[in-house]
Length: 285
Image (cartoon, rainbow, N blue to C red; front, side, top):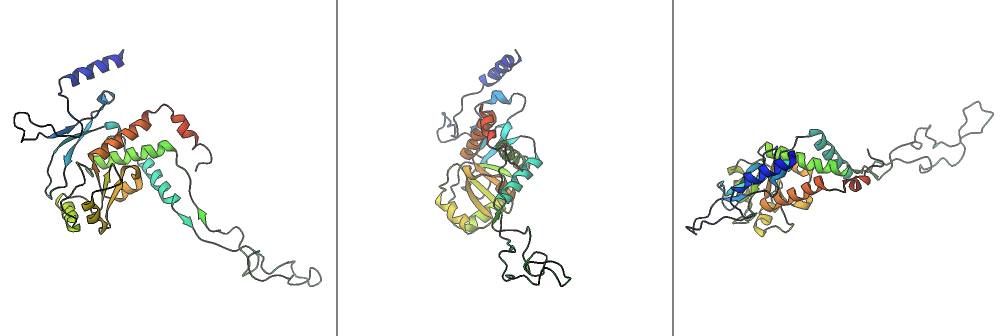
């Protein structure tokens, strides 16, 4: 009964709102030259009844000066979740460990040069019994239980720990005002100084990560950021916790923000989650 009442109240709240188009400006019918602010809303606000959706300014990269184009409503389950520092640490450690391969290598007694004959007879001399001077007991001999290269440190983190890490990192970035939404990645020039002046003018962090919904970026921003080591471009499918923590400011296009919402909400609500977790239940660290 409470669920039915909640849906009725949500329908009544949204009934008075005019229908708005997704990711587009609403043109003023009285004066076509005047463009109203862009207001992008989420699709399922009924599920956020007990938690208000978050709003962010929609900005543009076409000019150095910060200009607000409108408001973007963000889903609170993705951009306003609990800041789980422990889950973020697990994700960062997992990403650092799986790319680490140890090349430290030691030789066993079978690989050390020399030691083919018995150093002295078994009996008669009153000395300890030895069969080879390359035994681990001898100086210059082999190493017992030493490191052998290459040694990978790869292990799989549980699927929903990775999903929770993305959600927690996005929420922390948004809460610290280090997450910005832009309409697109088009800039007027390919000069790297434009990006540096843009970052300085808008008080962004020294290192910036631009995320778009597709892996083919505009030519100008690709050439401009190619010579700046602390400014990087990334598609949505490559977004990860380590890269978001590594960069001070996270800049998402509106399509990228919506695609992140869609993907993460799907994994949070999918009915076959037990099948996804089944592959990560054995031999986990």
